[in-house]
Image 1 (tube, helix red, strand yellow):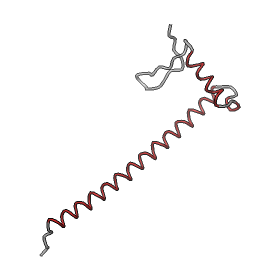
Image 2 (cartoon, rainbow, N blue to C red; image 1 turned 90 degrees about the horizontal axis):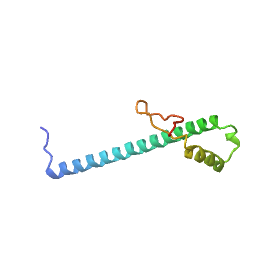
Image 3 (cartoon, one colour; image 1 turned 90 degrees about the vertical axis):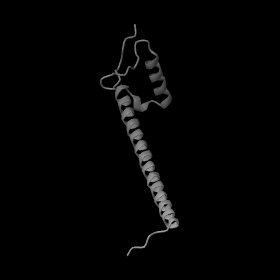
Amino acid sequence: MAQRKTVAEQIALAKEDIKQQENKLKLLQQRQKEQERKDRTRRLIERGAILESLIDGAATLDNEQIKVILQTALSSRTFTPRATAETGETTAATRTE
């Protein structure tokens, strides 16, 4: 015949279960943060590659020069990035006149 657990034993088991679930939650949160970092790194690398493919001699320019080029292009009245509702992508250029 199985023995019944006392209330104190049930409380101890419940606390242990809570502790295990909290540890599981921590591990899942760590995995999520790691995946977010990997996704960001991949996105930055891909966008850097796109940038270098569109700017002649980009590999020889320093970060400040690239920044000036982008600021100039983005502040131009003939260029404004616009999200496309259907695809979520941005268009290369849009007239704002």
